[in-house]
Image 1: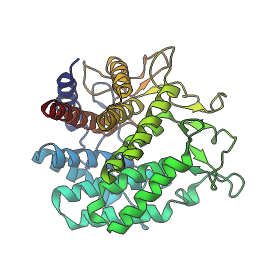
Image 2: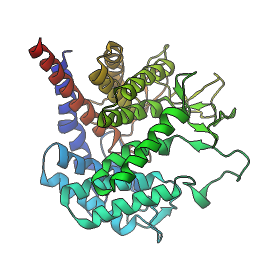
Image 3: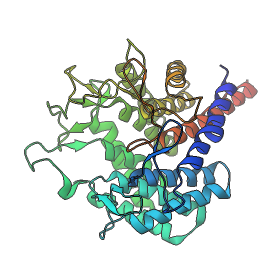
Amino acid sequence: MQLNDYQHLYRTNLLNDVVPFWFNHSGDKEFGGYFTCLDQKGEVYDTDKFVWLQARQVWCFAMLYNRVEKRQEWLEFASQGAEFLTEHGRDAEGNWYFSLTRQGQPLVQPYNIFSDCFATMAFGQLYQATGIAEYGNIAVKTFLNILHRKDDPKGTYTKAYPGTRPLKNFALPMILCNLVLEIEPLLKPELVEQTIATGIRSVMEEFYRPELGLILENITPDGSFSDSFEGRLVNPGHGLESMWFIMDLGERAGDQALIRKAVDITLSILDYGWDRQYGGIFYFLDVKGYPPQQLEWDQKLWWVHMETLISLLKGYLHTGDERCWQWFEKVHDYMWSHFADPEYGEWFGYLNRQGEVLLPLKGGKWKGCFHIPRGLYQCWKTLEAIAEKKASTLLQD
């Protein structure tokens, strides 16, 4: 395939397939918000509403309105989801629940701070689209609450016994690197810079282990290695996703050395996480080669592969490293031949190790309207930027 063929493919799949799938099948016209538990054809098989997925879908349609085309139906679709969340999504202290009934009654307590992270993104993006002050206020208050809770994100809901084996987890520092850029216009510049600096240091100096070329999921509070199930855990998808966040921060700062380092880490994690027998990227691995405790360790997941494509394309854009393009074509071929569903639209989420569809769902408790549309958009726009850079280089020659 040529560069313009890739551009066309990612753009048309986003706008003519994935976005219509969610727009046509997921809206709850009676109670508001979205159904995310959709089967292969897009039919609803469960009506529980998971707050982080509700917020991700608000973000997605507001983002499309802001960055692709100002379609009123996209804005209205995002706004009705935000209204549902505003009315039902938080407890009295402003923490966002994990899940609700269809009608909006709380089902699961706000133990998971990622609901708050994606609520911040959703209301920040919707504020950009509408200028409605309440949305901006919700985004900022939620973000400040995340910073307040970040050292003990689960609070009273943690299962760990205090003090025996305290660990820091990679997911929140990783997300903060992206989250702060989402609402940068709403924050004081010094808070933005402080959050970015802390995030980069945490990702690139604490969780990244240069002797391994890998990012660990959990480390001790002082940054040491914990020789335990949690301490030995590697989630290749998390590491690969975080690297395009870091590349974006490097581009923002004009820090080519940071971008180069992120590209090198991308290639190292991908080489480590690739299944040389069946293809695709493993979900979990043990850094010492022991059996992981996660029984789903060898599954191939949609988001892992989509986020990898973004990092590879951004790496190629910024450095021209041909290994990024070679890996992009390899991961692209695997993903489009295994995850995409040309029959009913959207993408499957879960494959077994051999690459066979494990669950035919298009959405559920963990998969919603986020990684696929965001990834298609990011790949489309990055491919455009690569084409523009190549054209500019030819003109200069």
